[in-house]
Length: 163
Image (cartoon, rainbow, N blue to C red):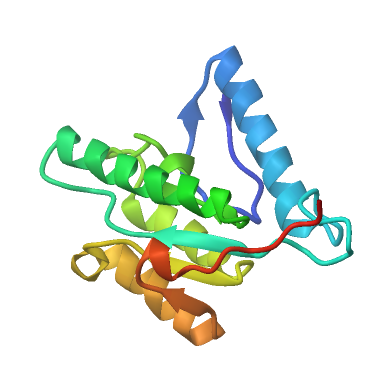
């Protein structure tokens, strides 16, 4: 069976999917719809305010799979620290973990990421972001939107939560 994602998401072409893949993709789009369209998302805190959302931007690709893996681990480590600081974190490295290849153009991921950035409060630029074309586009989008830009995890303030 082949499926095509809804028009509101970037098109990745036709993909052959197994039963688990169909379920996983449907669940992903359902969750994405809830996260991006809900006026009262699940991450609202008791006092009525919302958790701030931060996007991690940094290199994904590299010279071989080991470099890609190291970039993913670097981003996940930063994302974990940001969660511990009280932020809701979007980590595109984990979102598209090893999905890249000749059948999915890199710009498909970038276009989706630029849309996700529009729903964030801040962006963290990971080390080496200046050498990444995608990260430079993410930085440019964040600047256009007036997001707070952090250059290190240590610069990101802890967000207070209700007890």
